[in-house]
Image (cartoon, rainbow, N blue to C red; front, side):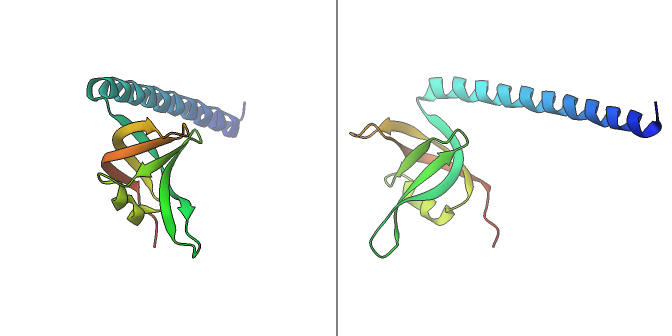
Amino acid sequence: MGSERRFQLRVRDRERALIKKIDSSLQDWELQMQNKQKKTNQTILRGIVLPAQWDDEGNVMRIAINTHDEKEYVIDFSGRGKELLGHLKELIEVNGRVRENMGGNPYVKVNHYTVLEAKKV
């Protein structure tokens, strides 16, 4: 076996080990968040803040958090929710209470948020 092939196999093995480590860390984080949610009756969401509704002139009237699993949570503007208007197209983590409106669509009242990845200007 050539040295290049051995190198490729080592790289592949390291990649697999790294993926396992990341998966394990993610599972640990998800378990911690689930336990925290049970204790505080709060939900933690990660996603991108995007416009959800515009007026006739094209101004953003409603925003939502779009999560990696393609769920959309409309932001309730009470609490700290209105502050998220300044974070459009940014990756955030929100701590808040999720409820459903009369139409059965989820919305979140934001208690706290953290910008995970700010948009580049």
